[in-house]
Image 1 (cartoon, rainbow, N blue to C red):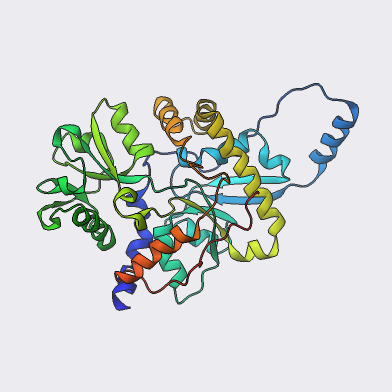
Image 2: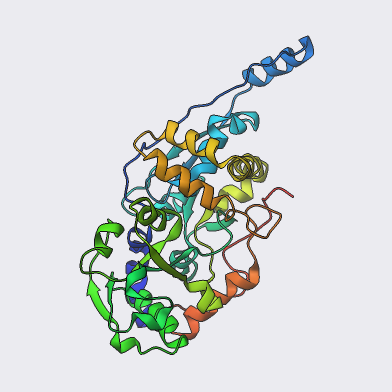
Length: 353
């Protein structure tokens, strides 16, 4: 489809527009923490033997600067879960062409991307060896936020209001979908071309509605003392409950070193489950590793996300094929993607049972 090929590059770059935060952070971190316990001679010998074993090196590339989407990774690193798994994990920030290109090229074994941005990867004429291997968060937590005083309690309420748009065809099609599904007139929504980096400030000026991920920009409005309304895309159109974000892996690496891949994901699971059970402690770990972050913001965001990482599923990272396929089917039926065969692009094979 000519139309699809024109938007491929735009969709791949749209990660910048949809990212959780635009804060600066460390490019990599290799800190670990161990606990001091009384152990017997055999345990000391075992620990010494493990310490002498050569650790396998793993490079993990983020989607953006460090934030609470990434907490489980930093927890696993800080508490020594990766080292216990025989791994030395280096966390890096993405290059200009994104995490997926770095993973695809083999410069990193793992990284983070979003299901909506991966569609061009799975339909590209040039094969890109990338597979989604874990959902960091179970449901799409993005939606439209507005000041309570503006009365936008549902998509139809956007009529006559100023919506800050990135000017992306897919973005606007999704807005049109939810507005019309709610009985509203999309043509009456005022599209204001503006890339919002400070949501609280924008909402107090000329912008009435912004597309955000609640765990970061939504929390930022609360921290600013603003009363807001928020509706989620997944609650209006079920196909929009896509996976955002996901951990991706180099497919060739998965095939050649499956055991290391499983060890990495198991240690990462432990990091996220620690964050679920101990959100305040996990927030402190993230802030220790990335001191540029605002501690109050991180703490509140972490508490909110604790119920989102696994939500209703028992297995952290699980990707439901029905939901995965539903979004790609919607893209295809609406002309935003070539057809992606059912089950393409993801696997649960490497997750801990």
